[in-house]
Length: 352
Image 1 (cartoon, rainbow, N blue to C red):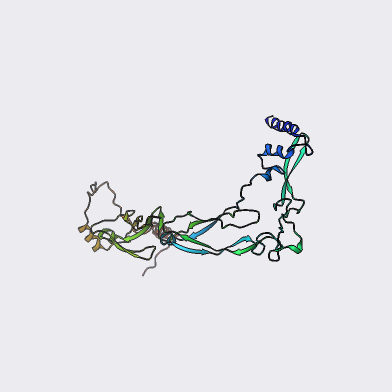
Image 2 (cartoon, rainbow, N blue to C red):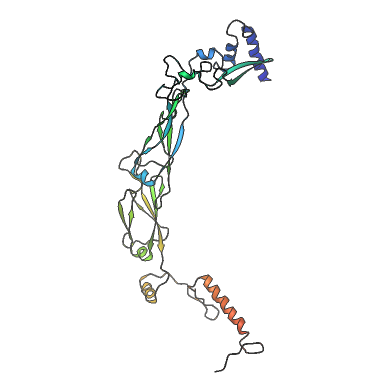
């Protein structure tokens, strides 16, 4: 197979270079550098310039309200992080010229070994036998008394986060290099705060616009409306409708410039969109009906019918469940009457 051809090719190069650990030239290190890109050899890889090791980035959720996103906010988040010991500076010992880091594995706790298995060469990672996989090798009497040779400590590292006006759900606030420190890395990772907007009880955000729902009575829907909206910054907005403007359920009206602030654009805002619901009265008095009939326009009424064949029905205001109960009660009364004739088995009324 192609894999076997690849191994045999490097096996042939290995024999040409000297044949093993005791041969001349680079031997095993050069062969591993050729097979694994130059980083896996026992000696050659260390001679090359290593890339700086960076710690992992950590994301943290930061709950914010819509008020925070509208007005902006600066908040301090308490936090502890891992840092290099302030006494030994991450060396694990206070003795000058001494380092607790194991020289056999460079403090990694593991090292790469190369083993030959028949015609194949295998590279694997094993625990360092010098430090027993701890990455440290120092006499107990020379250990740092503050960190006990661990080289790290926990310190207070609060984060001061600035939520800018107009920021959105899932926006990120990065803190470069604020991640945990370790003797095994060169550059700490980043801490990234991810904004998580909590639900507002009145406003709903849609990009830069704000939406609210407003219920008005029927009289205001017909004769003009006025109501007060308390905005996210505490201002009271008096919203009025034009005289003669009729509002139907589901109608939407726009108050320009009263939406969310545009991030990075001072003085610019989205719009406030109001969706109306109209509350109808449960019933009208006869006089009110006559008054409305005199004021409101009637469309063409479809009232032509044949009096002999047509059936007239009135819509009852009683809820359907109540109607059913009344009908069932009437049926029970009829059953108890037994036909109402006072015949055999029937119940007769007392004569007075």
